[in-house]
Amino acid sequence: MSYRTILKGRYLLVAPVLALLLAMACGGEDPTATTAPEATMAPEATMAPEATMAPEATPVPTAAPTTAPVEAPDAMMPKLGGKLTVALNSFGNEDMNPNNAGKIYGLAIGAHAADFMMGIEEDNTLTNAWGWSESWEQIAGDTWDFHIRQNMVDHDGVEVTAEDCVWITHHWATDLANQPGGAISPGWQRQIFKSSEALDKYHCRVYTKQDYAFMWNIIPPIGGADLYAWPERGWVDLAGGDVDRFDEVGAPMTGFVDYIEREVGNYVRHERFEDYYADEEFHFKFREMEVIVASEDAPRLALVASGKADLANSSGPYVEEIREQGMRVDGPENVDVVYLSLYETQDPNHCTSKVEVRKAMNLAVDQEAVVNGIWAPGTATRAISPFSTFYDESHNPLLQPYPYDPDEARRLLEEAGCAGFEFEGFGYSWAAGPEMADMVDAVVTYLQGVGINARYTPLDWTANVDKVNAGQMSSEYTIASGGAHWQLAARNFGEKIRVHGLCRSHGGGVCNLDDQEYWEDVYLSYAAMTDKEARIKFAQEKAKELYDGYFGVPIALRSGIWAINANTICGEWHPIDGTPSHVMFNTLIPCETS
Image (cartoon, rainbow, N blue to C red; front, side):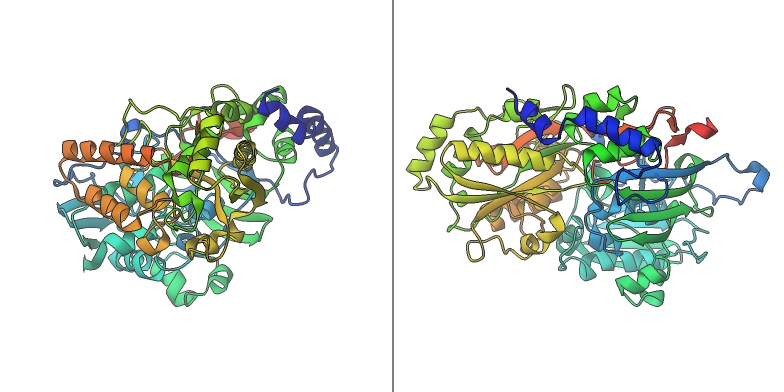
């Protein structure tokens, strides 16, 4: 019996439940108490292999300027769909400050109502067809210019200028970098950002503390970068920096939709922002959007099958049922590595600080069985490391997935004096991957099989994020622990180390590495290398060190899974920034306009 068979039992005979819920939905009964009026969500974009490679640290060609859009008469306006309804299992962090909430919250609100300093195409190449900057240039290894487009206004009709660029870059580096929250990128700002200034009304210059090879990889939303750009006026002048007040004044930002209202944990409503500056290709194709919460898979998919929603994120075991119910399965390929992180490995009083124990935890898990048990064929493959994929410069084809050897795992635990040690695995209800909780459950079962006193705890990330950020997973506070995390495949190698290796005190997000000072130096040294060949060699060497250190238990290189209502969403979908945690819906094509 495969682990997937076990999971299917836990999902309560999925197909009959879907059929029942579909019948209820068609009969007028709402299959979930959290549903709100209609809205949809989009699948995720595939990461292009070259997307993570930063340009060489030489002056970068400036994007061709674009003219500000001229307001067209109604007769010239494109035909729009009515409402897009998206169903998610969780909103995660719902802080109204997009940069404090981060990409988890951005899935529901921030990526649409906010904006970015630079735009990208679906393959993660840079474009000025959207984004604040109509052009950009690297002046020196530590100096960067952004030319803000003229006549770009916020949702209240007030123009955005270079002063907003200065404010937001300082906001990233100072107001956010030391606060708990969901954003992954402000820690980079604290380490790298030096200052910024407005050279004229539309010309913003940014200075970094050192040469930095990846500015064009971290400022736009490539590889999950979540440095949202939004103007000073709404947050400071209207809201006084208060999130509740910001909500009350309508959260004026510059994205392709205007935020209207929300009910925490239930729904968020937007409408198309008619004065959005971008090319029509990147504008929203619906008049309204509503994102709703339906925490369980079967009710969420029933909403799509019944036409009450247009898209929904889905767990791996549901692929066959999605197709059987007449829905389309879509999503980007190879978007991230999902794994069990091991918190506070630098704490010598945790057994997980010992490389022998981390190796034992990896050898204890039949990773192939977990992949086959949770993900449908073609939607996931074995992962090699949380810190390296074939998309980034650290890729070493000689590295292979860890083998399954429970006997050796038991021997290593005995040798390390950690046989029977306590461990808690948290299964978070990520909107980015509903099935990751089941992944941790499976891993914990294997850890128990080699004698580790492990337990599985399902938990919402927001209940644990402050403890993780504050370093309260150390032996002073708790037993050894870890949780379900994903490392975006297109993120550059240095950012992978920072975000998923360094503690918040070192500018990171998740404490997964043993010697924090050493790995922070590795990250900064790599980021400063302007010679690409030398940088690749260095990255491959350090990737081998990470692999040999068994930091985390990598399980799957995963594709995104979305159920799509083929009667309401038509044509090929080319999403922008299609990471599973941070997907944008502006390029979805409504069938009613096709």
